[in-house]
Image (cartoon, rainbow, N blue to C red; front, side):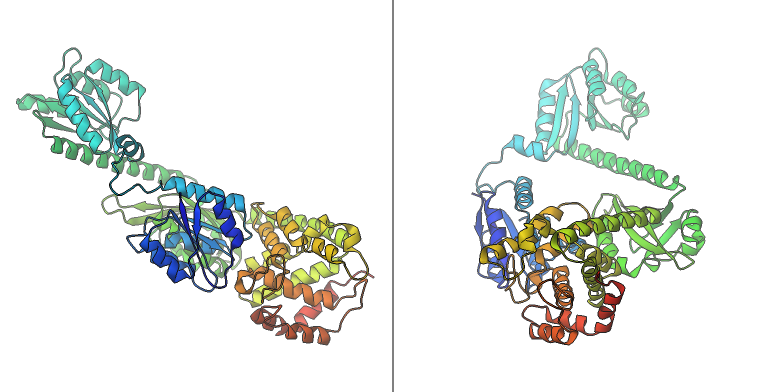
Length: 592
């Protein structure tokens, strides 16, 4: 049976996470502490480690596991109570194979865990003999075609190559080899006998070189002849190398390894050249080349139109000189991932034009490596101005959120004034808490749907005058989860935040809230912000069942709940300048 080690700390009680992990059919082991968890993993490496902690840094635990040779190959999933893109990038940087977070999606967790199991087959007993076919399927060094009319020699060479994870195809006639090469493009290297009956090795070589170059298909000639002119003739026709019979099998393997490496290096170089030509010829984008530290060595002329700078003004400067401060951390985290990966990445961020205005750019980047060292030598990029697209999308998103909010407003009886005041209060508090302007703006939009789940609650309960029964209150408590179900998995950042706010804005700092009784920083910051702003505006507004409380009385009650119902730090920030909050009532009054 598979084993999953679930590492948590004292303030984390992820029973729902444990249940989801158990759905994979694996045994879930939960040590008493993070330290005990790391020790258990080192003692008996499990099939998967899941790290879900609040008080401790998850990165410290991931590093401890990945830096230990005994656990370095064990896949690690970080399950985060406050997930965001930067933390996801950090998890990847530290070596975690997977990242997820709340609100918990059991089906997604199961899918990810099963995928990690597939990536890392169950550990075999120490003395088990590996299945050669299975090893060959998972570790193929390349495909070699051996052409020789001596079956015994072909068999010896084939066996040696297969032992070193090469796929080998054998044929004994030149005509057969030509037919096979015309049908199978996966062949990487050709080992070709010089003298064969019928179509000779030289004729096969000549016909191949009419269509494929020495870098596309390396050919190593096997010759039993000692005359140098035969070897020279083969080399002049385009052979890459030759070996004399009787062959020395280790030398055969070494030569093939060398030509495979050269082929891969040439292929990578061609791909890089094609990529650069593609980027440089796209005159509508700013095409750049930069050193690994981000210093531009080349900037295309499109910079004049898109940024207002001549290329010469930007060469020698760092790209970070123009990046918006709110985008810097996220870009830096992704930049590290670019340096570690052969893949192309597209990042969206703002750069400052010469006139001081900000423009949104989508930049596609790729790290190029020195084939001899494997180190990143240069980063190529193409930046496209998407400001109009971003601004249009922002307008459409806000319009969509407003319409959703009107639906919730109609059902719940909340006024548009309350929703606007509460959401703008959330933006102000998010900024005071140090979140970026982009995050604060998203929280403002998302907060308009904080009670979206109420659209599924019966009207007679929502609008009941007087005290609710226990059963009715149980229905009300389902609202956060209903809102989360309606808003989650949209693929839109603002709706994902709205789902988080809906789920968490009734949770209390001390764990006495609902629906899950989360506490402290296990409650995402947008949920803690929304609770404070919602309570203040509701208390200071007239309701059908009670008049508004004064600001003084409301503040006194909230201070009494500092560290109980409310995050003490956020409450202090909220109360530090109430005038700005109170002014929102004049801007967004309740209808008379």
